[in-house]
Length: 407
Image 1 (cartoon, rainbow, N blue to C red):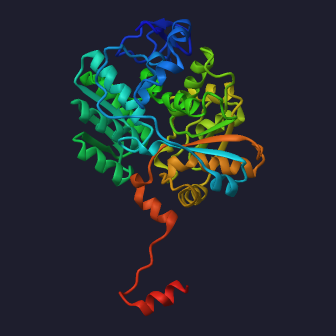
Image 2: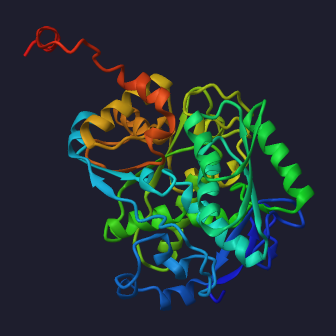
Image 3: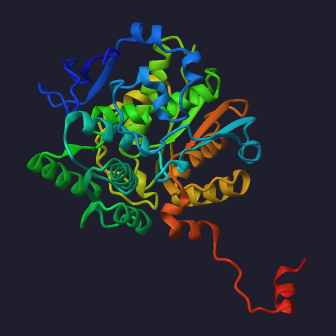
């Protein structure tokens, strides 16, 4: 890979060869970042080349850690739409608001970006089995992308995972293990199994390449804004991998001169589980928390990528906002009724955070804001019904219809 220099430990600074199967630092056990040759990328990454490429996450090949020969890209992942949400902006109190709907990815979440990268790197590593732990979306995205590419999967999920997400796993033919415990229990068991059977590790907090897949959401945001950056980008946060990945993408673009400023990040967590935001707000070491929220995809009491996430929030001069489950449900309704975008609870949390930030005066009404809907609402129908309510149910009688409609 001519564009990649090494994998660098964010804790001790040690550099490692960027082999396909690398995970954590061999010296201190710290998390790794992929280090790029920005001079090489700057010479080879042009808008003219972009104009000729497929509309997917792989259009940014100079900024991704894959060889030009990588062919295991079976599903079209990425290049999700971004909508100017004028009615939603008016309701929230903003002048310029954009909504990026990553729920349109093949398995209906942003996590497809990481899983597509995992499939490519697993192929480079020469393995045939991939495994991960997940609260749901990473699991279904791995199962779908692996099925399309012919990989076997073992997937560990907490037994509280929504049925819609578990159904996806089973349809895609994954070997599914539901764990009677927290996400931390699930993660620990998956890590032990991966070490025992030498499966490819798709756990995003451990595998540095997966953040490189997630960062493509930031590359798309920049391109869709014609490389003129919004002032704020809001992202829901669980393990910390997505916000860290987005920040890595923005920084890569800034380093090669593709954008002339960096956005401020809005880190949004649930009041039922907000360890990263708490550490940021109090400027203290991370404390583990219970997982008490309907937003299962961000219910991570022991986030494995907290260091990278906290670095992203701090470096961007970002904002941390915590929202209640009621605020999330209300925002699901509002986004659906003003934008026609259906987000699951975790996918809607980012926008709920924007609403709260405006209300609390943390961002000005004149700001240009982009919020990312990270997952589709069909993944959690039970909470969607809780947010929207039950439909009218009547006998097939016009008089009864007139009585209830009153129009």
